[in-house]
Amino acid sequence: MPRPTSGSSTLEKLTALEKRVSLDAAVVAWLRKEWDELLQTVERLRMEHGVAHEDRDQALQECDQAYQEHDDAQQKVGSL
Image 1 (cartoon, rainbow, N blue to C red):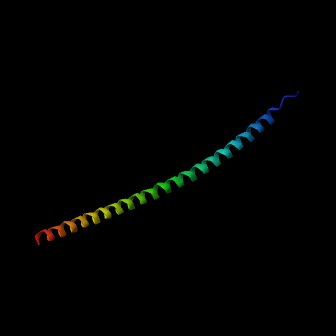
Image 2: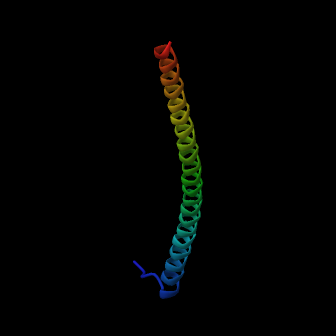
Image 3: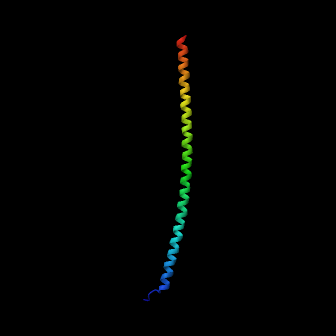
C-alpha cells in the first residue's frame, strides 16, 4: 500500500484547517449576534424597570393622597 505523499498530507491538513477557520468564524458571528441581542434585552429590561418604579411611586403618592383626604374628611365629621 503506497504511503500518501507529504504534499497530499499537507493539502489535507490545510483543507481541514480552512474548514475549522470557517466554522470558527461562523461561531464568532453567531456569538456576536447573541451578545447584541442580550445587550438589547438588558437595555429593554432596564427601561421597563424604570417605568415600573415610576408607576409604583405614582401609586404610592395617590394612596397617600387618598389617606390624607380620608383623614381630613374624618376630622370634619368629628368636628360637627
